[in-house]
Amino acid sequence: MRLPVLLCLCTLALAGCSSLTDSLNESVRERAKVQTIDQNLFLVEMTLPAHHTTLATREAAYEHARQWCEKKNQGAQYLEGVSKRLEDGRAQAKVVFRCVHFMRAPSED
Figure 1 (spheres, rainbow, N blue to C red):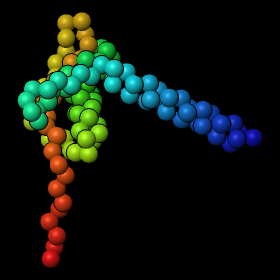
Figure 2: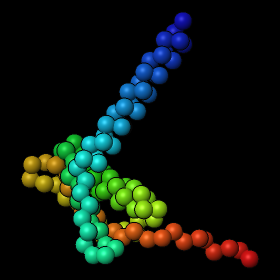
Figure 3: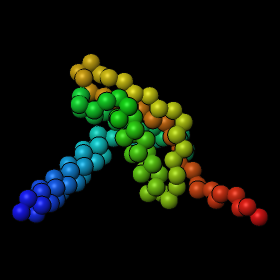
Figure 4: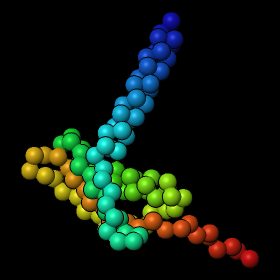
């Protein structure tokens, strides 16, 4: 009797985590701005609420840059990344990157 109840609770908890992750991803997309610095040099700036750490904000900025380049069927080459805590408690990160073509790994021939 307890096992089916426990399975139902676990299923509901996992479904809630998925929707929470989706809403976090949506809020991250809304708070990220990509600016063009040069022909193939970009800056992504991201600011997240105070409950996020500066490291997590910088990682989210890296991921946003990767996804941005992926839309162009390219990879992201990270050049510089910095993050800080703002006076109001929010976390901010800036990442400079460029989009590069994928290279095949050398063969063992």
